[in-house]
Length: 318
Image (cartoon, rainbow, N blue to C red; front, side, top):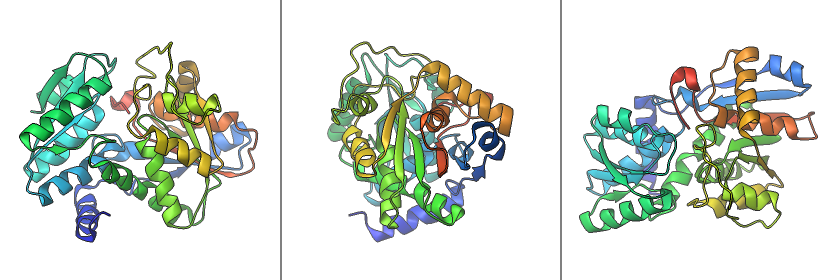
């Protein structure tokens, strides 16, 4: 259980740092173009560092501070690192960012320029998490990695996306499409809706991702992608080691939802459609949600697309 005092401080600091309460925008031009009854996009790119990761970073940092820990560490391809650096700077804390060498796209230079402490790890994301968690235990740092000792904080931080969406919409949506990376975001959004007694269908979208491959194959467990190909488009979502993969799969199954593999080209086209029709700058990996909605047979429902990051014009990554 997350202490009530921590939750209240999280809500207070979100307001103070202007994290969360992101816009829910109706996309009427896309509705008309695609024959969709109603489509709204939740613009998480409006958070301070351009992604939804600000939410999880803030709760992790506040939890560390309540425990008397002023150094926080996590493995990340860059976005989460920028988010941690941002909140730690405001809270007078130190953050150490573990960067795996195999990632295609990172924000390492941005983190270093802003004063972040980088630890380069030879290997993949799993190697970086293991190294980071080991060092956290040795040095008594706060472990801010998803799926590790404080995983419930990451999931809980994202429940607010669901709560804000329901409040803005004024009802339960029929489908909620979420880009799937680690699985933490999808798990959190689903948990948020459930906490309000709402059960929309959850649509997970990704590319070269073990959780989504497990859904598409109907095995309903994380399934490694043997021919994984990382690109600058799919890198924010791709992975065989996903800390919260099982929770994401459970969300799709429990909601009678679905998982879809979206090719790079589809993500790029969806991102272009957001810009051309609605003048919204959304990263292609985030726009995979629109591509997924377009594939659904039904169009006569209310759809929510969670856009986790600003696009290339905003120089941001999921």
